[in-house]
Length: 478
Image (cartoon, rainbow, N blue to C red):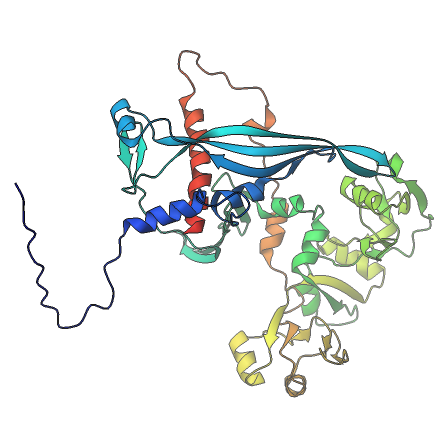
């Protein structure tokens, strides 16, 4: 029996500008760009699986004696057709093989290497599910479809919430294009925590130490500027002294009454029981970078940096009495009394600074920022064209200087906008917190599990990881 198709009647008043697209072509063309089966091995573009392999390879060992390189990949033919996979409850897939090259390097003297043996072989990686003509996948005999979902775009997100006690809490999240998410949170005790992939939180300073800033003073130098504060012992108004009490000292103050001469300490003699403090500044012999200053405790981190710079010995003091106060320590009442006895009239403390844009009027700027004290420049203002210093660090940032810098077409200036105690308590509180050890880190013994049941969760996790990599590459090609 034949059926006659009915004619389509359109009541639209506007002419059709384009034909209705075939929506399955979006899925099929994207999957084809992922595999690039129609392209030869030499003509394949850096897309899909080709990009994934190029990002992973080459793989080298620690000593760079072996190198595993990627040459090409090939996708075989499926063993069964779509209808046979549905009948047999199987997955419609094809074997994926990659041709890899192992290069063995050999020493030729003076630290140089050259390729020795080169082995090339085709390696079976696994079965890759294939897309059918209907835009579906057949997995264990059942047809599955890919559902498009919204993807959080890469970037940095800032959020604000209110604690039940009324405290405003802030958080930020770093979302990379590929990799782990990093989230920074602030608790009610003014401590900054970090979560990596929503795992257990730990202090944010522990992350900075892992990135190479192992000492507290290194972290303080990252976030704070150094500010000179005058201490007048004869001054009747002790408001400045009261405000500076509790701040962190940015420069070590030597004790002039200390009579012992510094001694030479070899790095090879440093161990866990060594108690020594640097007697002066230590710079890198090549680039002049400051490695340590007077009063820095010689610990394992400082010894490592000195060894990397090629320094074999340093001048140290064996007693902490060689200094009135060391940098990084808080200025307590006892420390202030020692400063009075040593007749120290000027100190250098850590203080927060902010960049002030040179636009508008000075009065509106001061009113908007609510400056409680006379602002000062936290760094020299330099003309970007000539390199001339227009204003020096420590100068009062008043209306006349604002107008002068604005006339010189300076865009912004780094300014101390608060009083001498201008450092934020967030970093101090976070430095006081140390990451706690968990039972998993204290014990490395393998966990016991039942032998009557196979570890299905482990196999599912591995499978999901492999599929996530392929689907991520497919999504990138789309």
